[in-house]
Length: 329
Image (cartoon, rainbow, N blue to C red; front, top):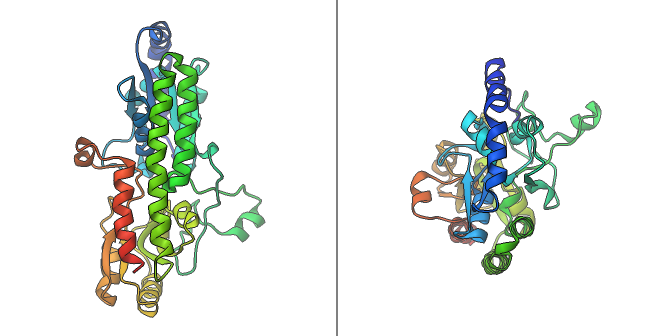
């Protein structure tokens, strides 16, 4: 979702960058040889991947507050300073991150390594599947014909981390960069990366086994669907109320009816909702069909409680695996 900064906010950020960040950047460069790396990630997946790699050898920060929705996030002046002073900055690169380009253009990034997760994997275009609620005035409309007629560039699905196979590629790309920046801890990072990718491989095998042994290959989300890469990876057909980056919360009667009919016709036992959702749509579909509402986490963020408990991407996806198994039985 495109971020539109007000004139006041833009001026505030400009003042912060001009008055505060230059000196702080110089100080940060001078300290790099004695202090741990400072790594800033916009959302939870790269924060977690990086944390698994660096252990206690570097400082990792997540800009998106726990429990917050990434599509509505806007950086604070303090966030801008964190980015300006970091050694490595990791972001997704989709429409929700349009603010990043504006910020980076305002900075001297010569002493900073920047990782764009969408550059680490093969991306797919946003799509709207049958029955899904479209948004008339939203960029993520997924209408291929409209894009071709208007000669607009296609919009790519930004939720690249939802596939464990992609998570492996992103983790390796982060590790390679960290090893380049911090040669002193290179072997430590490489061993941690090897161990963590082994966990992701096991996760990938678990999902493949669940799907291979399933009696159906269809999933239904009474919610947004930010899991295109996951569905593609495991050959799942999906139906949902909204596209992945939709800002809508109330589906039309036609959308509800379509999903209710789909659940009834295929005797689907589970309707999913995603994290931080009020899951009203999923509940409505379940009430009409007798299906069970279950959480399927896109892992874009965690709650404050889960963060304190040390929940990881692997933990969240393992929970997803259990719920997926129930949905496909």
